[in-house]
View (cartoon, rainbow, N blue to C red):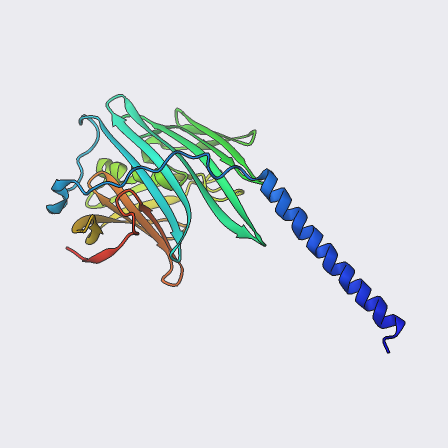
Length: 296
């Protein structure tokens, strides 16, 4: 026979299970109704063929100052350990009158049994020599975790307003790089061409973007980012083996490798061998980013 104590224990266990189930349901509903729509992003850039001149050996990109206007439109896939967790579409324009980068994107991740979506819009404005004149990021996330960041260069200060709170940061404009969402790395090959000396360029980084709550490089001394030439490597693009430049990016947040062909950003790899982070141009690599071998 089942005594009254056992029956009470059973009822308590059932009650706890029901309560946990209700809490999980409430959480899923809250996330669902507070999450932004994952569809409010720009359409992906159509798949592109490799330009015909890319079959030749890569040449160092020319500095942008005094050159003809140049534009690039790209679509990025963001992946960790082989699984895509986000995408971003961007437009980069450079001319004698200044430079600008605009992007929209999203990323997603699992929390308990719910998939959380975060969408964002980003705008970077720079001078003709790529000094960061202004930056803005609107990040829409559930559960009140969104971000609103606006920054502007004011002489040798960068004034940042994050969710209504203002911070003033001392900067050296010609050394400063703004790194936000991943598309801002498309500016790095251009900056490197302007400032590298013997294959090395050093910058002070204002770091925005990333998951909600990330705030780096907004107080005290700015972290130093060192970009150095690291030879070439072959990648598959449109069925062809294309030699591209490698730029090693060193920072206090870890090292990464940037791949570019001239001014054109192609991919960024970071993380570890067990858990690699790969950001790549899905308009050039619709089936994923693949190295074919090392070059000179």
